[in-house]
Image 1 (cartoon, each protein chain N blue to C red):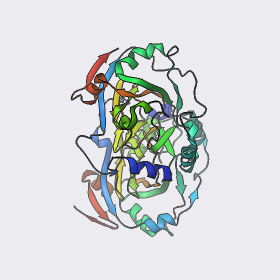
Image 2 (cartoon, chains in turn brown, cyan):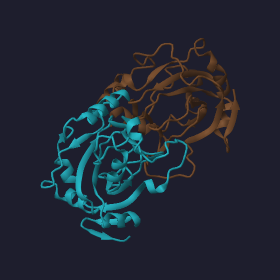
Image 3 (cartoon, rainbow over the protein chains, first blue to last red):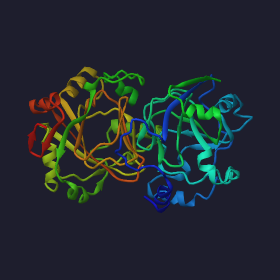
Image 4 (cartoon, helix red, strand yellow):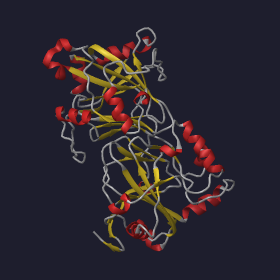
Amino acid sequence: MSEVYEELCKNSEWHFDWFRKEPEDPYYTCNPVRFVGDWDPDIKIKDIWDVDTSGDTSGATKQYKKLGVDYSKLYDEGHFDKKLNKDYQPLIDAIGLKNPRILIHTQHPGQMHPLHLDKSYGGGHWDYMGDKKKDMLGRMFVMLDDWHPGQVIMIGTNHYTQWKKGDGFFFRWQDMPHGTCNFGHHKRPVILISGEITPTFRRYMEAKEKIIVKV
Amino acid sequence: MYEYRKQFSEWHFDKWRSDDPALLNENFATVIGDWEDELQSMKTVGLKGKMDEYRKKATGEAEKWGNTFDRYYSIQDYDPAKHPTLKSLAESFGLEDYSVKVHLQKPGQMSSWHLDKGMAGGDGSDSQAFKDKAETLGRVFIMLNDYSFGQMMQFGNRVITHWRKGQCIYFRWQDLPHCTANCGHHDRWLMHVTGVRTRKFDKLLSNPNQTIKLKEVTNE
């Protein structure tokens, strides 16, 4: 696809065999946890970014243009706001990631985020971790609403669908190429939280059965 | 439009329920042949046919779903005289009075969740007439190149990925809503054939997973 993607692939530990089938993917855990709460799925974003300010995105913009996708229209994106989004704070607390960076993504029908690997590690946010940063950080997506047909999240060779409100999943975002698409008729809101792994989060990562957490 | 078309569908419209396998067979058949040169010789054309009232409504609806018709896929200028291998492929299912479309879905393109009108026509005033006509028609999707990551199709509640070149997908187009997207980095080629069902087609349907070497059917 592009020089940047190819370069990031070299740094990834994933196998890049799109037809390989594994009974348990060590890089991806689907639905280890469901957070149960009565939050409004229609989450508000205080400041929807006109541009991604998390780093230099000019390379990504160019690559996506080649793919026919406008980088500024992958989804509505903005930071979690403690005041406006206070109803969701118990959910954030229950996830168990320390010093988190929390983003809200609302992907509208017709939007897609093509296959990619993430380049940045928080733009300096976690540099205090030094070389261990890659393994000390975790990321979880929490689905804020039930799945609707036409909504798909790709992670490696997995295609995640039919989630329920509150379902959380974990994947090695440092290594796995991923993308999202909404070719359905309904909005798809998620909270994406990255931060330092704590014992609470590790429990979700290592869960053999789905953990239900009331928030 | 989608709501209107739903009344002719027998699907359950329950997103949590497993689908009846008779509605979809993603391994209907496998066709073996070499059509790469013919694909590469094709050019993109616009939507064929006149922009009738149905299409006008469908276009408006695509916009409602954040999409546009020209972003669904790029229809190619299939010509049976210039593309004999693909013609042979289209003929191999035994569908009569068939129509062929070759779709090139480029990265960034997607067709939103929809139901087809197919060739059943009608103005929608007689749902039974539509259903009766639709029952006589079969539709097959033939994947013209291997899957690559980021490409996907959803039929009813099933998402299909990881197809191989020549893999044929049968679905009850009159019942199953579906959508396709290419969030990957490579072109996705597909041909669909729609025509009047014959004994040969129904035999294939009741005995699927066959390998078809163009013009010749052999059991695996």
